[in-house]
Image (tube, rainbow, N blue to C red; front, side):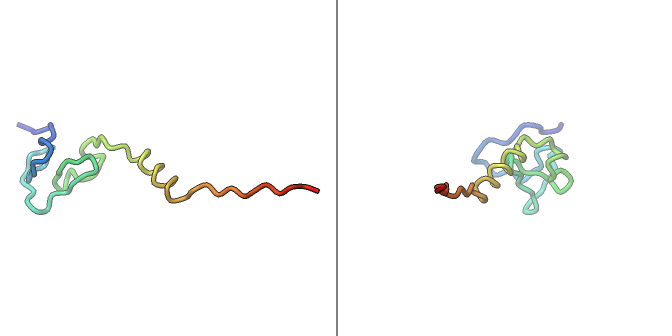
Length: 75
């Protein structure tokens, strides 16, 4: 039987959340806070719920603040 639900928070899992394969120390922790094997580590392989587009936009706005100069008074 496949385990598709996430493990309870605070409990360390040593199995892939998609195929239930033992991963041991080589498990990949995704940004959606789940652990996956090497075959399911990519976001498109396990239907990731993390919104990478919004996270990327927020990171760019923090790294590149808007620079506005003072207006020059005309004579």
